[in-house]
Image (cartoon, rainbow over all chains, first blue to last red; front, side, top):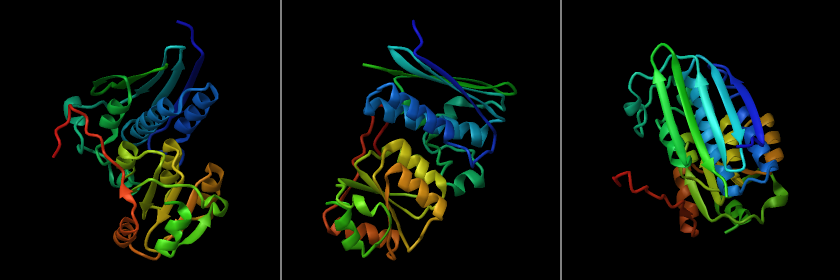
Length: 141
Length: 124
């Protein structure tokens, strides 16, 4: 499978000021590639949610964008702390976000469900003490 | 309804995007929870909020929103308005509370954004 685009974005823990910059860049790049508005919106929402999750919950990590002719892939990999109960974390309304995140309008427990709803393919792996990896795919055409 | 109509209904002040008041709006959403906005809102929707931080703009950018309404006379900082201008957003502020602003817009014919419930999720 040929790769049209590959980009990596380091995301720092608790960097609320820059949170969203990676997603804005991803959206811009995909728009330049001519990705349809409908797919673009779904990628942008999922990307923003996963980027915020890295800022709010992780100890830092990387957001990776990969585009092939068939699909857009977003991979978020962090350095911990890991999610003790993924099933619970996937539930709408469940949140462990702190006051800072909540005061900014986040931490409503919609992040992971939003990602799953917007992506065509969604997979989450997490291990306490090691970290969390989320892989999302969005089919093109 | 277009944004100019909303300005009249809400007796609102235009903070940026004066040249784009003819833009049509089809539905509305009132929320300070950006995750809810990200879940349910589309580009034809106007967002009524009391939250003036940059994440409202980032959220609007992700969703290609065209108009933001600040309730209770809130005015975001200049940096935010500059960013809004760059994004092509119209930003207006009304002295009405969010509840009253929504009521006035509803009375004028604007309706809430329709929510699609996925089959996998039970409707409350």
